[in-house]
Image (cartoon, rainbow over all chains, first blue to last red):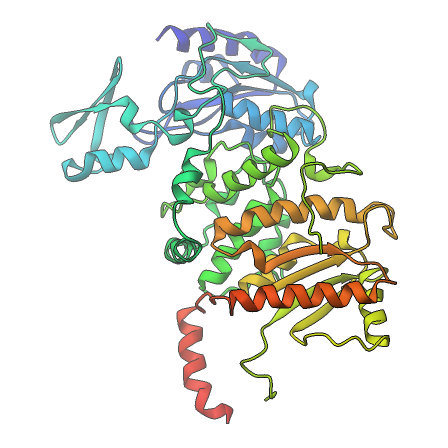
Length: 320
Length: 156
């Protein structure tokens, strides 16, 4: 793993200048990575990038405001950082970014589905990457999976594999997978009628346990303890176990991210019951891109919903 | 129980204090006849309208939501309706993804002198919502639904 060694060297080089370097280390099992907060060379030796470095380290940056930190970012993570910067939620001079060409990350739901009858993800004792394949060891057998089959959806349409803002860039920039976002995932969803879509959300949201993992994993949900969803005054949500309240929470999350969501997909990845919550945010991102030609985290300037123009050529108002 | 029970739908209107609420008042003073489905909530400015107001209404069983404010360039607070225009347009785009017909929500601009225009807006929007019919309600929480069923005989 040449890339890993190079990144570790870059981390060690910046360690003396910062309080902490945020990246990834090994997780609870060989299939999972986990965020790693590095403060010493020993910590840096535990750094592990690659296919299992799924977490978005931009999530932790607002908490470190006022301290100088460095963060290792994939392309999508850099978009989140870009958005946090353009909203003034973090300061550029307090954050140092280490970018690298991301080759895509794993989708654990797909791994679990691919394993199927062969066993649970927790039974995997070793994982080897062999070119385009993953070789897993579980129950004393080896299972070969095609990497492309277990790669996250967002990576399949990735336009920004190389961090677009980086103070240090390690390695050669790679070609993006796609040149434009065609929102094909939304097109598939929209093949359903309005009634079917409503039934779809009713069914999906009925599984929701309101753990708010989607909110807590979101790098741009910065209200934290002041989230309107958990406030009693005003009381937007009741504590009833109803689809209405659960769906309304997703609407709160999505509308508060309108024009801000960079599509990192952490909300959906964090969901323990597999609700496709990213769909709502993708829909809003498409509207914002169409109306205001703005891609969150990439385009400079004030986010479109925090500003206006006197004439809005793209908005067709009701004639009556 | 109103005689209009079953014939009337539930439409929620969010009107800015300075223009559209005045416009609705003008329509009333002028005795222009209007459909009675609309229930009006007066807000200081269309810029005060949190898109969640609209979503809360729609998800809680409203059949339609109408937002009306001052014409662009005429906002009492100079720029509230410009922000509203952007927010409301983005929200309208989200409705189909949730399975809600976007025609259940409209926003428009009516000034305080436009009583006639207000009548036209209410007429057109009410008709539009009636064409769509009552909105499908999301189910209540199972326990609450069971409790409501148990309490039903007591209501009479």
